Length: 171
Image (cartoon, rainbow, N blue to C red; front, side, top):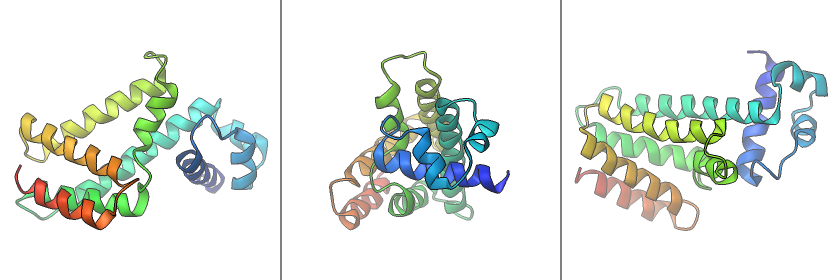
């Protein structure tokens, strides 16, 4: 991937996460990434294409983060919870970027972004099953993760993290 495309994606992800998808225009992304207009359009046909690439990249990074957290363990649930907690501390203290995208684009269920978000949540459940959880345990863990992610915006992360770990031990 070219460094200019990487700059665009990095800056777009930060801006979209900090401010919302609809409130950030391409001009601001271009200016803050310090690239030319044509650079953006050489890589992305539209703002929606840029958003999709940001979400795909974030998903890949998140799934890699989870996988690295359980690389050498027999008890994946607690280790997954610890990895998710670390992710929240490093990348997601303001809630779930995927659900934010769905909120902003959700009026049209056929929208590519909305469909991607729905599929992302299904892929996460599937990942949990790949890590050895049955469907019931995977859903319980998903509920814990979603709750912790939501509370990361409003509550003390240390308290949220402690409860996330304790509750994950019950699965």
